[in-house]
Amino acid sequence: MKRAPIFYLITLLITLGCNTKQSDDNKKDIIAVIDSIFQPKEEKRSLTANDITLNKDIQYENYLLDDEYPYNDTVRTFQWDKIKEKLAHIDNKVANGGNWAIFSNYKNMNGEAPTVADFVRNEYKRVSDQYGVERYQSVPLYTSDIDTTLTRYGRDGWLVKILDSDTTEMVKVSGVSFEGEYLIPQRYLVKWGDTISINKVAVVDVTNQNIAVIEKREDGWYILSMNPATTGVHNPPYALETPVGVFAVQEQKQKMDYTKDGSSGLASNAPFASRFTNGGYIHGVPVQYPRQSIIEWSPTLGTIPRSHMCVRNASSHSEFIYDWATVKETVVVVID
Image (cartoon, rainbow, N blue to C red; front, side, top):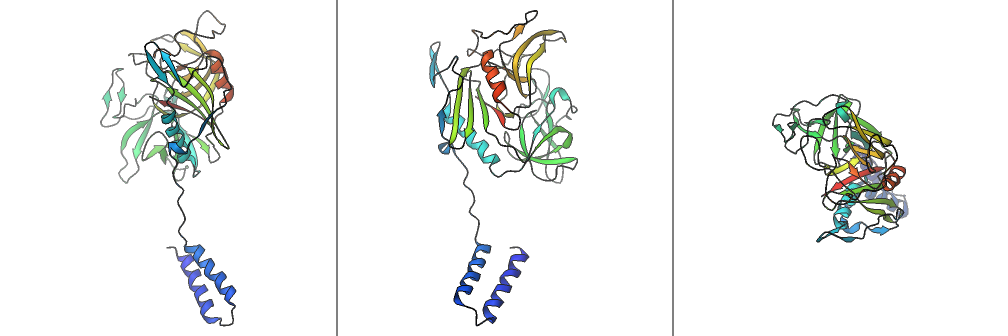
């Protein structure tokens, strides 16, 4: 109990005891003030999937999928229960406000992270931590206790809350895509401030190869599109699977160029690209050089993983997302 409220209580009690002429109404008012000071605050209940309502207000109707739809000899679905869990998780994380930032180290632009003590070399011959996060393009996360120790890596694009001063060399953060609190060198943070609102979510399902665009309004969450997508495939040494987690939309390019595997030569470009982690974008159908015109559709969309990490869409759907998404308001949630 803090000293100021105790002093205030003693003063009020003395007033009640000494002023015998005080009216009963005034005494009741003082007692009410005392009760308000020491009344325990009711903690806000955390949301669950059952608290999330999903309504349909389809804004992009091309290639629209049903909640369940046939694929070869199986049935694929939109995993609405799992999606509701993720939306509740995001709502709970941002409900109490705070100072927010994202991890940033695209192409090691802020320096290669040090090597964790218990690293492994994965199939791509790259240093990786025990959680499967590669050092390349990631940020170093240190324990927040007295003996600061590099313990793991954080993915580029992860959304985090800054827990104390953001002016020190090492900043304490907690995350949306990971549990616990860690210290991170300040240079790996892009600060978003305390005015963010996560109202736009693109949910990518790497199991069912689909994507749903969802928007939060005053009366709940609304589904704006339900479309086929193609995610990344695990195929060393170049193609990587699309990582699961919650990522912030960091930048957008009307045309995203990319290089041939193992070289610096341009191979192709993809239209209407929104980057969420490392070199992973939501984008349209790739166009092979020397062709320049946009390709709308590919028969491989919504089939099996085959990209290098990116999430391929019909080009008009990637344009829909490109126009709809806004930085500091949009996240990409990747589920399996």
